Picture 1 (tube, rainbow, N blue to C red):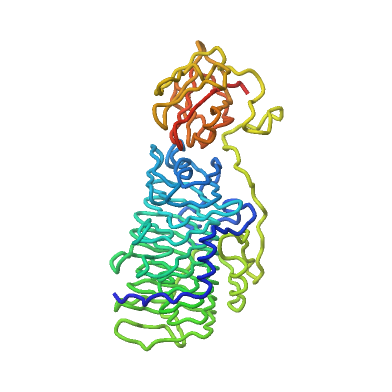
Picture 2 (cartoon, rainbow, N blue to C red):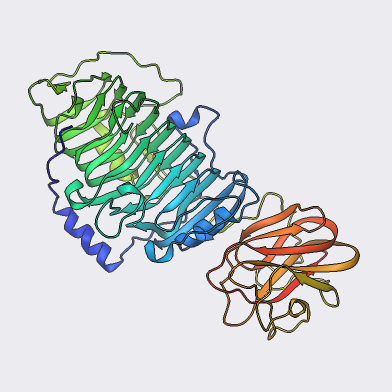
Length: 522
């Protein structure tokens, strides 16, 4: 297969490099996950809701993202992970657990479902570290930047893909993302948005893909035709050599995208693929649509597109450009509703809405960007939590009201480090503490008869605050998971009568020190 020529970088790339070197991240408003709801093919096959209805947690490192996944009751327990800060190789480690399968060199969403990852605050930047989705379903990734992920050179991550999906992936919505590289294959970079090995029902919306040799693909080879049902809308492809995207088999729908400076080729429909291409704006580009670098043809249905300063090559044995006057050679039926902006306004609409840090703005279908109603800016309680008691203090680090039922109760656990005691978590003394033999372990409070508990407060010893990562709260008698999440503090759950309650630490950034394991009836 013919390889694209070396990438010709714009002067804008120098500006991006300076920003990366200085760690500059533009400020943005807080964002709520799935603010406008999924669109396109991600709405089919049962829809894409991500972590809706589940607990919301905050993460500032890759390890904390993995801890949140591993701290769930199961691999399908819904969760929204709000991410702020720079995620890189230095703060991303493998975390183990029954509800996850993670790795140290990427954000690994493997064999899981019902997850939202959304950038908030001053932004979420995945720097030289990709997001890998494998054997998973119902995933939302929103308002994040993924940059400079390499497949060779140093460091390497995720095969070089900024976001890569493979092996039976279903229902993924990537929205308001910025995916960028600093060169092509010869510089160590691969695709920005790749789907392989039976990946279906995906939407990429309001995103920016730029400065890369390869925009992305659907299907890893001419025989990998089990992928498809992918929608691309209101995206900016800028300074891309090829694959905007490359389609091998399957169906894809591209509408209201702005393609600018596609240096070698654009939408490459081949190996039996069908592309529906509506109301896009192609600018200063070459061979923006057709079958390229193969004799296995694909097809397309076109309408309403604008070709502004687009050049076309001559047809050849391995090249079948759709222009200079692109005509449809197939028909594609789209199963979901959508509204088309006029192609003439696409550059302005996409400029105002596409990419991370745009406030999740979307088009109203009449060439007018709209700002969605702001969502919650702080993590919200689990939907299983009861209505908060108005007499409880608002600060989750403050002790709840009422009597600490742990004082005078028994305690035990399943692991213990030298020089500590289970009893130290119920003595009311913050200078004494219990630690597991390592970074994970369990400690319990027990009573001689059934006791009603609806709230606990895990207090870390001085100097160890923030060490505890993912956790589970378990009814020891039944094995039921009462709550799960990340970080110490007050944890609330539906009132339960039990004789023994266990706090399981399933992930931590060091050796935890639990000074007090307080329990309360309300």
